Length: 490
Ligand code: HEM
Image 1 (spheres, helix red, strand yellow):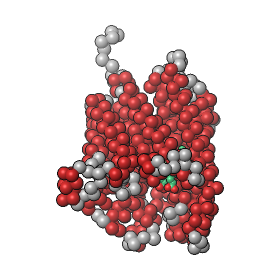
Image 2 (cartoon, helix red, strand yellow):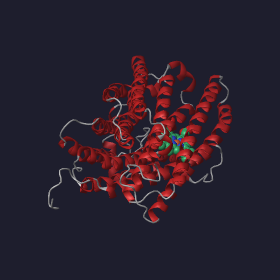
Image 3 (cartoon, helix red, strand yellow):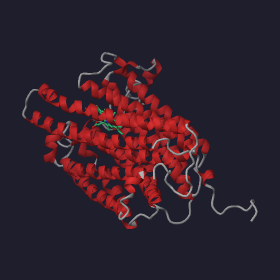
Image 4 (cartoon, helix red, strand yellow):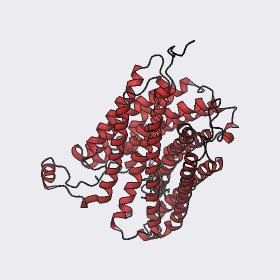
């Protein structure tokens, strides 16, 4: 055979733009660091140990929003985009629609995230120019160029159309290879396609409807739908789609049941969008909507169980791999936390339970378990697997990889237990009609533990960053092409 024979399948290097994947991951890690520092700042403020107390632009009220927005749009979105640039061309055997478009989206997205942070930090002091203010008042739009008063929708109004356009371009760039592929479609691609459509619609719903079209109680209901759909229709389908891709590759066996994977997908599609109002139980929103949200939340728990069973079936008989293979350990630990958080959701959504925990730290504990304990853990697993491939050398230190895992997994679990307990105490304090400060004083010890748990998670992330730097700067340590996991991790 001569070398000019055209290969039957495209080479991996022609399909995947590895440099771009690495850039997305680095951007994600940068925003993760900023977000964690912001989280620590708020945690310290709550125990009256904020070293930056009195600095207006670093006030915790602003940095709490930076914390959540940098996580959602800076860390999770960037990391997912990097993973999709790796997975979709390999699943479809076709490159994305345009590499130039990919780089444009990368730059535009960083602009969106930085502007969001700037809008939040500068807040109402960031006033519009006169002519913009005039135009805005004619259109009944808020004059401030700072944050909007919708949770997770704080993105300044002038950035919203740019972000919306960006999401459309993302969908076009990735849908092109998916639509062009021939043959049966693997379940990951179902999840990805759904995520592109749902994320576009969800972002539009939360960032335009309550601001311009739907006010009052209905605006609140839409806001609830938005925050929940951000988790359920943006993060969840991308996360599970990636698990369906990476787990079988690393375990070198097919997913246990194709049928169950379809139940999981369609169950999510049907029940998830109905849940949002469960954030606003006991409000003036009509009771039939609140009951509908409760029932669909409990239904999702059943769907989630089928998905987790499917992945346990896939690894069944090969438990040893959890000890050796670090990415697989990240993935399965995240799945157990996913099950716990959804189980918790099915309980906490009942009206009886809500009476006690509504507005307490229980919810914050739940939020950290799902966002960090599940999706961030999956992303760390994927990064742990992919970075050696992206920079062409094996990890500098297996020990640092292990510390990253244990500090993150244990740290977030402590935070979850601690805040859950704090929530129950706060609920009883409030029910006793004791003065508000009594509940604040009673929460202090829980908040101290939370600050330490956060420090532990942050220390784990620092180990990962140091390891990454040492790997990048260190001597080339070849990966064994015969095994899928980097030798240091297997
Ligand atoms: C260094 C570690 C972290 C610390 C110390 C920390 C601390 C905090 C604090 C103090 C709040 C505000 C709670 C309140 O308003 O009472 C918060 C909110 C939140 N954090 Fe973190 N955080 C950390 C890491 C993370 C990470 C890595 C994620 C996601 C991957 C995350 C996701 C969230 C979410 C979703 C909320 C909003 C919760 C809600 O509104 O119910 N945090 N965090």
